[in-house]
Image 1 (cartoon, rainbow, N blue to C red):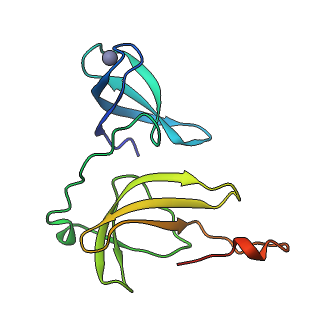
Image 2 (cartoon, rainbow, N blue to C red):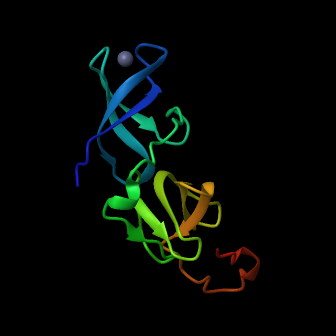
Length: 136
Ligand SMILES: [Zn+2]
């Protein structure tokens, strides 16, 4: 559960981008994490989509890791390695977000296809919101 991961994010104490260690999730906020700045040692809530500097993710050898086969109905964690059957491509989840229609999506860096956005926890719209039903 408490998977430690290092990121580079904007530290509001230092006022610049620092290396930080993710220390925990924020209840009800998918894009936010508790993070501890390695310089000032302060713990704060950071926004994974706004404060974190997107780094070049290392995808070397991830095909040898225990990858989860991607399904739109599945749920994924940042840092998780997934395998996309249709593309025959391995990737790593770099961020997560919730779209305006409430649909969750993940941003995945693939070895061959590059950065792609995929839906997760996909639920068919129950009412007449047909125009939102785009699935990859
Ligand atoms: Zn700091």
